[in-house]
Image (cartoon, rainbow, N blue to C red):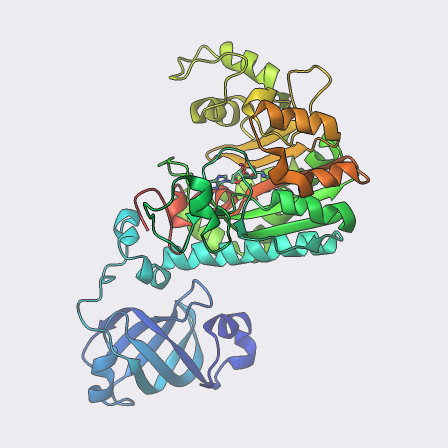
Length: 458
Ligand code: 4AD
């Protein structure tokens, strides 16, 4: 269907001014009076609506009438003229109704609550809010690919179906083609008869296969969906989220922290440059000062603090935390919030966590108690990156696995990377939705995904 995107009309208005153009889109709002009608049309290419001015001496009333309904899909031809109020608008000559929209279309009002919109996820892309969310999400994804490609990383597609549990936490969705059948005496027999002849799950992380790839390709990244069956019903947890995971050989913790900071600044800068209208919209609708916050993140250094020192800061804060703070405890949301929102007021890398609360693959520090790992915490959202130097020493890695009762046999191929030409290497995982929340100020992860998958909600 030959037509011009509304975004292109606004961007190249000089070229189209006073010319006849054809546009398509959906009616966002409309007004009708005796001789004239107005329609705000949106085609999803930009946040701005295009005003259609319909004079009934030019277009017959019988044609105009069915077009005046919110949600109706139209194809319109007219003259693209300058207008004092709107910059430009269309003086309509011809209207075709592509799809009528009856009065039970739920998006009649200008503003709906996000709670209400979650009940109609299939219609959320028709709203200004979600048009802005998905525009930033798309730009951010592109910026991520641009960053890694321009820095010499190979994009690897690691498997979604896996037989291993990367994080060792066991919170995985199992996949199977067979129902439980009492004829099986034990789990091994049951899984042995399943599609893969073994227990299979949806991956929680592409890291292990990422490491295997990097141990030959040098620098790689993965970017795809991962799945967590954790029962964390919070505004920051989704059962299905998009995970960015670079893996870099010949890099220690210090190097990967530098890469992570440069990467985060670069993708934020990209969104600032390419989504100014969306960010202005989020600043107006939600987080005041959003753009200043993002500019300041891009232009200043992130803070760094060792876990042990962070514990001291929390203890001296004078705050009454619900979860007591002791060396060895996992940092809870309230602790992270104090460090980012009150103490540092900017992104902070917390480094060198106790080995016992972190994963088996992290490099053991010489103190025998901590690992070369870091989480990047940001104000308002908390952890957006989990990162570590990997344990490159075969025996130390095996010891850490044995300590966690892991079966070494299931990880033979992974262990081979340490046996055959092991090198210092590091990587991190960034949750796309978490950084999207940080960049847009969106408060709930459910409002960053087209169809959020969370506990009790498919
Ligand atoms: O800290 P995590 O669990 O680290 C890993 O999975 C490592 N294998 C990454 C690596 O080193 N390659 O998860 C990494 C990030 C978190 O910081 C968070 O941003 C995101 O993934 N994440 C989630 N996002 C949304 N919902 C969930 N349930 C998430 N769990 C983790």
